Image 1 (spheres, rainbow, N blue to C red):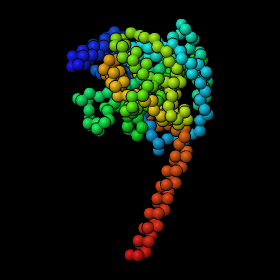
Image 2: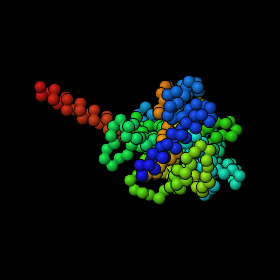
Image 3: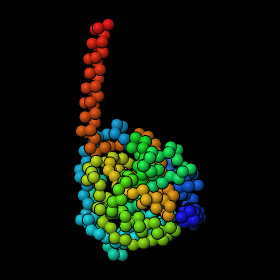
Image 4: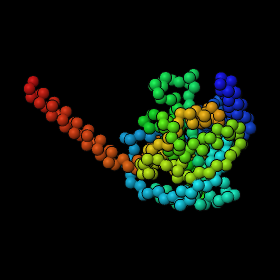
Length: 312
Ligand SMILES: [Zn+2]
């Protein structure tokens, strides 16, 4: 077992080295990681970068129209999974179906967006990387790119779309959580195939329904929206981000298998928001309830203070 782990890590290290050496673009998530990207790719130091920290208070509530997905999102279609040296991307096997069968609109997106790819970000920390020991029963999986009030999710899934008329990119993002139950999710087949793609350039075909992969509890209603960038070099800005406040479930074993076999980690930490507006789609009622609660708390406190003063 020890030898197996050692062998896997040896392959991973070799893989990282090859990523750096073969594409000549000098970026990865290790020795030429996110903090150095702007030296080669100046836009990575821009003021509209992604990911960012999200939250519930410094956001603007806003009502959005519903998203519309073309019917083939529900179909099982052939996708090609490919290790591109930075993650494993899933693209529609275009020789079988044109990408135009997967279209997204609504949600206040400017126009019709066509599916480009999906991929994941993850990080399963090794013992030497732990800042705090994880609580009993929890796992050191903290590879989401966006955070909520400074806290990382276990990982993050991105579904990338492009408006073919304007070339603008829109990404739908979902947080990954580690579920203790070994559920048979739509992602199991993805993991089973992705973990075999140890070397850059290797690929595998598998069947999947995008709607099943995106299936979460909030039905595309509860999300954050802001203008950002690609989270990988060249960090191009002008990307419309929609991050759903919902979770895709993975088991700890599935994330560990990706981390051990494909890449140890592949996430960029949150970037400064600067003066960007971050919208939240369903915040109105939550914020109103909280405001109501704090107003009530203040009234009660004032009442007791006045009573206390009158007795003194
Ligand atoms: Zn991504």
